[in-house]
Length: 353
Image (cartoon, rainbow, N blue to C red):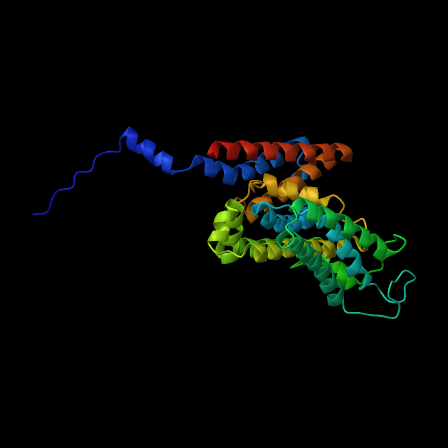
């Protein structure tokens, strides 16, 4: 004879135990940034009489932060492993001038390589290659020569910017770029010919593709798990057989490669390669990563959080511009955001100890 199972209604103790299983801290950490973004968008919409949430303006905001977001994706890999890359802005500038110098329209008075007409893809690959090489050197200095990431990338920041100045000679930008190259930064796809600003901007598409690939790598590959393991406990990662120097070199190479891509994108957007391009963008990228939930303590971070962080920066900048706030005050605001984000991160990690 089968036993009768008697079910009782959940008691207060049972409900409390179920609530403990649901980690409210993790939930808040994962989705607080989305709430903050919605709050900022709503507030700015009220203060700008709705101008900030016009579809054209929102698309423009995302296009403006595409370069920051792409660099932020590489920076996410770096910071998850307890690293930092201060050289991405200078690498961007060096990649931009190299790429632009190879895609100028032949015959101009300011063409660097007279008599040479190269395909646009050569310039793009050259820009990406310069970025990847600089990142590789960073990785070797950190992994093989045991330099602190701050020191190694600080040195590369100066070297890459100096090389960009030397490459341009008298400091003049390389202009008169081919239309096919400028399309990378200015063009749209899936657009209606009758509506010039319809469709998806190419920089936004590149940002989405880069973020999607990076998110897949971090979430579903061994290499992604190695990133979190190194940032969480480097000693345990080494004991478990992870080849930390190799992973470190790859991570910084990725960061440099994405900085090179951002250099190609920005130079194509403005139609010239300038040696000062990307100055200070490393701070924007770090800000996007930190406010997106990646911890300076290592082992914690997501690509989607960085995406939201980059968009939040764009929304703030755009809103302040619409309200005619001084650009110098905007720099102050960014600094305050970094400090607040790091304080929140410190308090969050101290509670776990």
